[in-house]
Amino acid sequence: MAEQVIVICGEELAKYGFPDRHPFGPDRHDVFIDELERSPYEAQVIRRPSRLATRDEIESFHTADYVERVRELSDLGYGFLDAGDTPAYPGVYEAAAHTVGGTLEALTAIMEGDIPRAFNPIGGLHHAARDRAAGFCVFNDCSVAIEVAMGFYGLERVAYVDIDAHHGDGVFYGFETDPRALFADIHEDGRFLYPGTGSRSETGKGAAEGTKLNIPMSPSSDDEAFLEAWSEVEAYLEETKPQLLLMNAGADSLAGDPITHLQYSESAHGHAAVRLRRFADRFCDGRILGMGGGGYNRRNLARAWTRVVEGFANPIDNSL
Image 1 (spheres, helix red, strand yellow):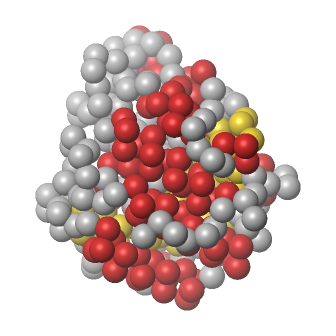
Image 2 (cartoon, rainbow, N blue to C red):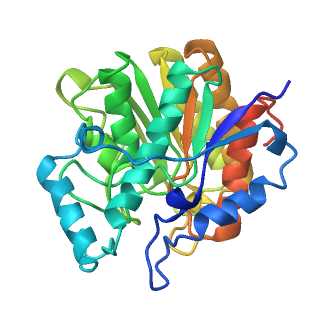
């Protein structure tokens, strides 16, 4: 039986996107919503607006100096927040704070409400480090959510599962020494794609050694290869038994993305969502939070994210 899923959306959330034909443009939000409205599960969707995250919330992961730098460049309205991928524009601070606030709004609903499934399409900004922007990501909403889940809600095993084509380096290195932050990432091999990290040998450090799983994929990997890698993620979740699941559903891993080389279909995302929903039901009291992540072919991201919402709503695996 299909169940309800919260989807964070709205005008303020849609403002996160860069001008001048940048691949991460502000149109991504509306393209997804248009596709979602055609889904047979659209009636299961509960829409909620994002909100502006507070400085304290953002600084649960990011340094105060970095947050202030973003605010200053946002007021200035030009320049770059990193080495050249992530431009500043007027209001970028507020737009980025809404991506964090949207993910936190979803987390609050999951932890305190009666619908334990949610999706923030413009969340999943997994490259931003504690002290800097990177790879189109100003604030790392994934990592803020992990900090809040562990700090405010006191969870001891928060699992972050990432199928974006790019390695979630901001999340990985942000929690590389923290055993409470479980991490599983299937991504294009860093020898061929930004950010160049996420080798098999990177499994955590110190007390967290062995708590992280990185699975680099060859550039031509298809759905069959994805399923083989996915079996490792399932074995990892069986062993670690998380209390909360976070999913980065980056759609740049689909065939036809203009800046990556993986060859998945949208069915890979549908399969992952269905299977994660089942793990959430088994171990997490149903609690699962999806985030859109990357994706620069508009049709791909619209269909892949819609399949994720459908998988959260109806965990019947007929996708692959």
